[in-house]
Image (cartoon, rainbow, N blue to C red; front, side, top):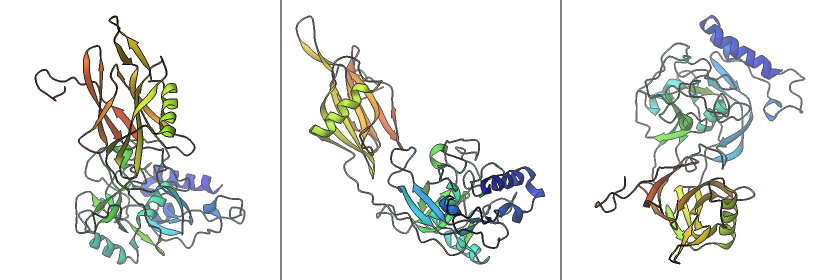
Length: 400
């Protein structure tokens, strides 16, 4: 019943716009004695809303699934938590970016100190990173404020432009009724950015926009900047109440981007089993892993690559050669290894080399037309395989 009433209130506010007062739109219905029973979801237990504050939404105490669980994509494993559950206390948050008025342009070109001072003048404070993530994910802990499936038009993501007026995308609101958490200005937070020890003195930002909307538009997405930076796409919004002490906490082990290792009995057998049932793998013979690599496209992400062939073919002259060759890329799963993709190298035993960045590798193979290579990229959880490129005649190691 609470969810239905809250949903109706948000829809009414979105449709009536300026004809509804901001205070009315920001308040959530108070639980009744029936609503507050112990059989309800964790965010409804003992969370009677305190007195409303004009222009602010009350985020009740509850559980935040912080970051993105392993296996889901997009995911930036060296910058966000792996779906850990955190208990958050209740807090207030502005409905819109500062100056927190529907139709007003967000205030940008502000440093971190200027943003914190503007909030303090209103007896408020900057929000923490995880408070913004909680406000964005809503009571159902969705990946985006509007759900788990990316929709570019809801928050006008993937468009690099100056932030528009507050509320210009009326459906860009979280399950708690907080607007413009994405698709507008980036938001200064009260949290230090502690992902990379080599980059000290940075402050976390959330929200904003970016060219890869599916990645940038996630509630878990963030970035770190020096606090003295000010830009046309950096603004802020304020929170109130006792700040949550929960913070993004991750360890980021790093290793060689690509390392060749002898086939491991347990892992290689698992990769062979996955390859034999993969729709892109050769349908003849039994695929046997003869080479193995560990690919680390990001810190905190380790992929297994098994290379081999499925059969031996004799030519008319009696010479033997391999066939049905390729690689199976997989990762460790909760209960069993998970296959990401299989890429064929046809007649050649596969070989890998590093690319321009850690999330790129080159795969070498060969078919009836001769040798080729393919660029394989790891795009925040997804594997993308490029077209075959051939070595240019007389140009050495130049492919086209």
